[in-house]
Length: 187
Image 1 (cartoon, rainbow, N blue to C red):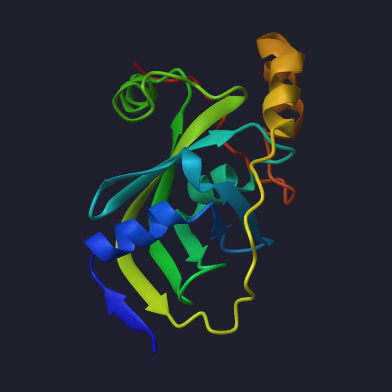
Image 2: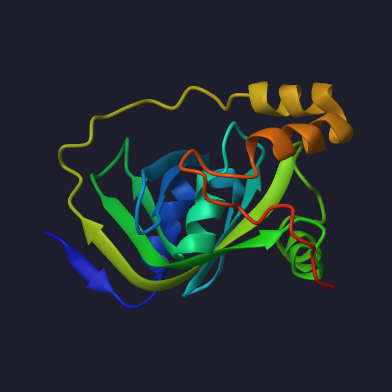
């Protein structure tokens, strides 16, 4: 049933690109474990061991805090239609700060230089293990459409208000861990 791989293989890449949603899971050595849904449209596979996703402003920033504290990150993809399959990417993650040279380079190379409204950082995962499992218990769902509420919210708020929101809501995790979001960006 379950199989392990040392890298993202071509059939894994194809499966990931067919999905609409993935889940990221992170934790520090203490406190709460975080699991968050993400849009696959924000994800890019750079090579057979590296994945990034453009992370947008939300009500918390648990992943950033956990990556700063511990670094462990898992991304999980599930087939909600077609043949059953669950695919997990395990590894070490880190946040690439917005306005850093690395962020600008990744944005230019992999997102056509276009930031989605509310973009706050890029999350990078260096994959050390890929695991697949059967997924036979995952229910079948039909995709209806993307939601546009986050885009409309970010556009209506504007950059200055988004910055203030991030300072209020994204500086620490719910367990009080720093996210590092407002530390000076090195050039």
